[in-house]
Amino acid sequence: MDVGLTVGDSLERLDETIDGFDLAELSIAEGSDPDETDIDRLEATLDDADADLCVHLPFKQVVVTPVPEINDAIVDYLARLLEWAGDVDAQKAVLHGTARNPHNTDLRPLFADQLEAIGAAAADAGVELVVENVGHQKRGLQLSVLGDLARETGTAVCFDVGHAYMEDGNDGVDRFLSGYGDLVSHLHVHDARSRGDTHLPIGAGEIDYGVVTDHLAGFDGTVAVEVFTDDVDLLTDTAQRARTALE
Image (cartoon, rainbow, N blue to C red):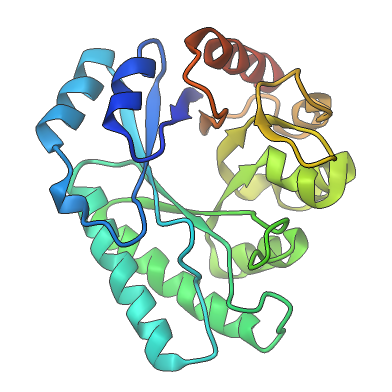
């Protein structure tokens, strides 16, 4: 198991926080050109820390719409980003599981088609695509729907523990991992509170990480601490708590 952290799209944050972690998850900002990234700086920082790289595809980009031409353009756009990710030796690429209208059941077969096409582009680039649960958000597919579509398409899952909690509490975490835990290749770990606070250090919120232990003990995938702070002590503490929960 490798434990790292998300760094947004900031190479400065990467520089300041990566020491002692196994990997960094770098975001590609919507509308940005990843070719403008300072690759020499990125590679040097990762080499110095002996850390691997994952990327997060643009947060706001939906996977599917009712319009075929737009869907084709989405695949082309993400395929271009995935090619860049492969060129910088990213291991995994995180994709939010979203739809223009996630409650429109007619879009679900189209979502599966899109996911397969994006997954094929990732495979061509030498990157593993992992689809992330964001069912607590306006355009996010519900946990069980995402799990079913991931299984149908053979797509690995980035399970965000905090997002699952925000969608359906500790019961939602338990149900998803009971039904789809075998699909989980990548984890986002943080804590949350039902009143709306999220991306807190583990232990500062209400998530029962014992539920995660019940299903993912011995986890051998990758883990990214997604706590919105540059306080290295807090990040390191959450990483250690995650390791303890997943041993």
